[in-house]
Length: 202
Picture 1 (cartoon, helix red, strand yellow):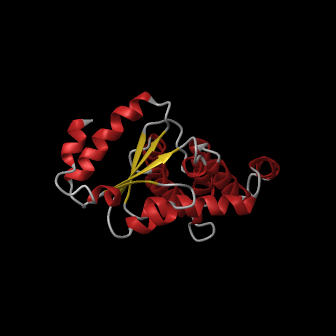
Picture 2: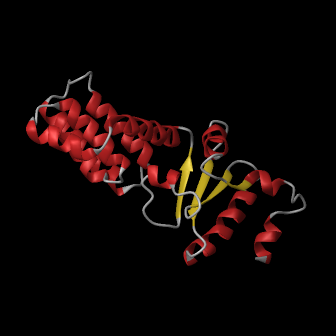
Picture 3: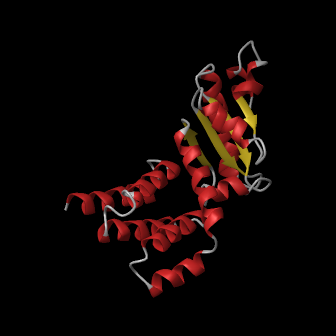
């Protein structure tokens, strides 16, 4: 721990601004608003997570060394499970860099999911009429909200395959929003991008 303290240098007042804990209530202000001004790293952690305790001091040291070019926001997922749930965080430690778009995309998708209701009803609609693209589109949004990223991708790719121009290319645009929310390094993003390219360019 002494090594980390040395990294803060002669101005310890800077640390609270560069590194802070966030809550479900303050997430928008601490992460989304802040990421419009500069990159923000969010460190999802929990007290029982041993690797988190090793990683966090390294992140803090790196952020202090960057001298204000990036901020670190920490979120205890035990106390505040809603945001990591919306973003599909399934294991920790998880560190995500926000440069506006990713967070906004995740929150927009969560809002959409709230408005459309449970996935089970939508699954029945799609089973009854596989050409009901709107039901399939809504199902993809509901699946994404419950962390079923691959299944959500499948549904949107099915629309792209069947009718690329449906609703002004809505299925492809929604997929792109999924990829923004999940982040470029997520396996679901990489797989989905490959499969989308195959359909578009075949």
